[in-house]
Structure formats: structure tokens, C-alpha cells
Length: 89
Image (cartoon, rainbow, N blue to C red; front, side, top):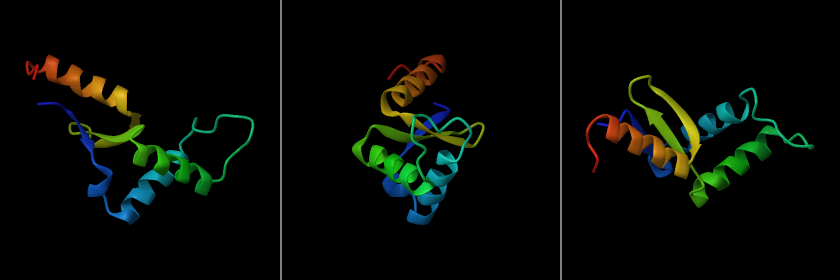
């Protein structure tokens, strides 16, 4: 069994999702570019990326931590876990 699972955005309560986006947007190292964005702008951008499928929420079952990850990278992490656990399906 994979230690990572992708969590569908639809399964997360709106208030919880907003809190996750705000926490992620305020992490150190998330401010790049010439123009600093407000928290509202950052969370709006993240929400659009989630809605478009560019990003997904990945949850690690062992550490009980989550992250926003590019969809392709999330698929790679889940596939690698499956191979490491002997489940190549």
C-alpha cells in the first residue's frame, strides 16, 4: 500500500481547504517573483491550480503531513511507493 494518497479537493470542507491554502501560501520560500502577492492572491492562484488539475493535495499516511504537489510529481511519488511496496498495479 502506498504511503501517499491524493486527496480530492471536493472531499475537503471549504473552510478546511481555505486554511490549507493559507498555510501553504505563507510557508517560507513560497514568495518568488518581482512582485509580492497578497495572501488572498496567492490562495486564489493555488485554488485555480487545484481546480485546473495542475496541483493536487498529497497526504502522507505515515507522517500524517500534506503538501500541494504538481499532479505529475504526485503520480510519480505514488507510483514509486507502489513499486517499493511490491504493488506494481
